[in-house]
Length: 134
Image 1 (cartoon, rainbow, N blue to C red):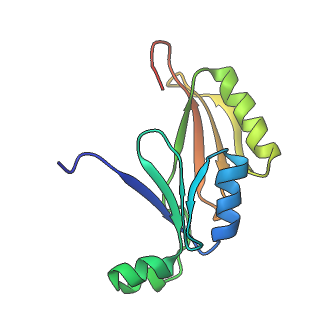
Image 2 (cartoon, rainbow, N blue to C red):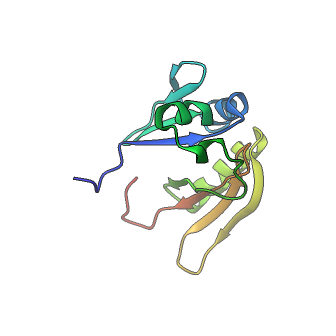
């Protein structure tokens, strides 16, 4: 029963910047905006942004009030081909994503590129192998 994720929520102190990034730069459609909780349309798992105070109010756990530093998670975006990785990387870095590593064919046979969101989380674009589906 616990082997399925139903929602991924990114907790951030930069909610307006992150909303713009995920909606404008990465083209996620905003389907709910409560000011302090924003949810996007996504195939499969629900995807949202919120601020630490909302999480603190729900759990009363003190770690939600501690400053976070460094990489805390990575989102990986599958693309149908190596060429699609290059095009997507150029598009999103042109729209404001922070470039981290330009597309490169990796030894395991996937074209891979890395970029960062406004919180500094590094995310990945990767090509599917022949026969794999998104």
